[in-house]
Image (cartoon, rainbow, N blue to C red; front, top):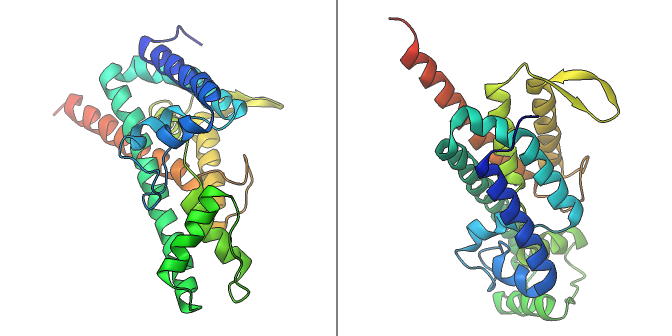
Amino acid sequence: MGRITETVKVLLIANILFFFGAEYLGDYAYKIFALWFPENPNFEFWQILTHMFMHGSFSHILFNMFALYMFGSLLEQYLGQNKFLFIYFSAGLGAAGLQILFSYIAFNDAYQVYLDAGVSPNEISNLFESVMSTGEYRVYSSIPKDVSTQLLRNYVTPMVGASGAIFGILAAFAVVYPNLPLYIIFVPIPIKAKYLIGGYFLLNLFSAITGVTLLGPSNTAYWAHIGGAVIGFITMYYWKKNSFDTNRWN
């Protein structure tokens, strides 16, 4: 591990300050800075950026900052500050966009089930208000429990974390250093970056598609991981290919 670069250092400090600031402010910080579902009254446009600096637990920020520390500096040394920041934030924004898209799909499907069951839009709005203010809601016997969970979870659960941006960094790293041997705990043999990071991506893709949690808590935003990784991979692949085409002999 080489020296930590300035940009990575600033990102680490910013995330850590946000984490302890949120711990001090409590729920108010999450209300203001976490990314809420756009239909939720807590949603604000700046949350698309600020949610990347919020984390739900110590283990959450520890994993993300460890990955940033391990892979970020080497990638920044290769790319330079501006391109590194572009990948970091574009991956974070792409992650939020894809997660919101799939949240909308799940939300609208569940909302339609409620309408088909004869529940009026006004009653659904009252349901949202109740669960936001008290944590309780009316149960409709004609509506499956998993549908209610799908509707309300998307509405009331905010998105936090730098995971999408970190996945963008990991994917870009695998493009730049595909054969770099990496070690993981409890595995005594080195694994090439393209296989380790690619395998981690596939595990997240499996969980995103099936809903089966293999890594992390059950409320992990897997589509955000996928979105960040795709943005990081495509951007880095384009830059690397374009650089090769520009510098090769004619």
